[in-house]
Image 1 (cartoon, rainbow, N blue to C red):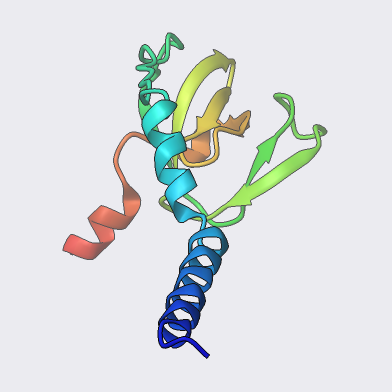
Image 2: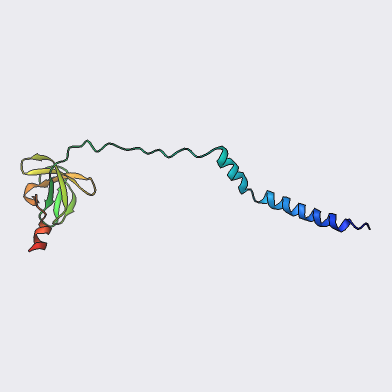
Length: 127
């Protein structure tokens, strides 16, 4: 057996292992693809402020006050609010105020006697 055969075998095993590792780990292909096709730039869309008219801020001054679907005591109750809940006035019909709830955006009608322009919880906390 010639003396160079063990060297050829060692170099052959090294080359096969190197090729195996090269083709097994293809992360270099991802790097090449990212370089060739970079991701599109992030676009930022700035929306204009809401064009809805903002009415005065009012607060519920009572417990279990009904938010109704229409003005009147016979209208369906959509939700009930406790003292201090904030709403925005959008319309008025007689003793009924149409409001938009500030945190949920839900609309409905509340009797004007249960609404106040000052936060009743702030008044009771300072007394």
